[in-house]
Length: 190
Image (cartoon, rainbow, N blue to C red):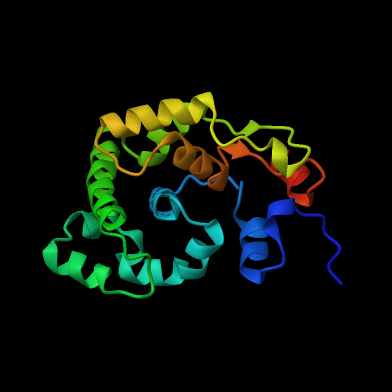
C-alpha cells in the first residue's frame, strides 16, 4: 500500500501520480524539456492538465520530440498533418503558436546562449518555495509570471498569458507549490 502524502490535486490517475512524483516542481534546466513544457502548458489553455498529460506521448511524436529547430520549419503540410492528428489537441491557434514559439525560442537561444539562462532570470535563478497549506492557496499567477508573460509576448510568443506562465513555472520547478504536507515539498526545498 502506498502511503505517501501527495498534493490534493493529484487524484488517483496513475499518470498524474507519476507526473507529480517525478516531474512537477523539479527544477528543469534542459532547453528541450523547457520548450516541451512551455508548449504543453500552452496546449492546456482552457483544458485540464490531465487531458494534455494523456496526450503527451502523442505530442512528442507529432512535434518532433519538441526539437525547436524542426518545429520552426513546419509549414502548411505539417500544420495540416497536425490538424488531422487525433492524438493531440487539434486547435489551429495552439498549433500555430507552437510553431511561432519554436522560432522565438531559437532566437532567445541565439541571443542568450540558452533558453534556460533566459527563462530562469525571472526568478533570479532560484526556485521560489511557497508554503502552500492546501490546494485553495495555490495562486494562479504571480508577479514573476506577469513579467515573464509580458516579456515573452513582446518577443512574439503566443499562448503565454500569466496563468500559463505560472503553470509553466510550477511544472519546471521555478515555483515549488507542493503542499507543505506533501512528501515532495521537503525533498525539493533541500
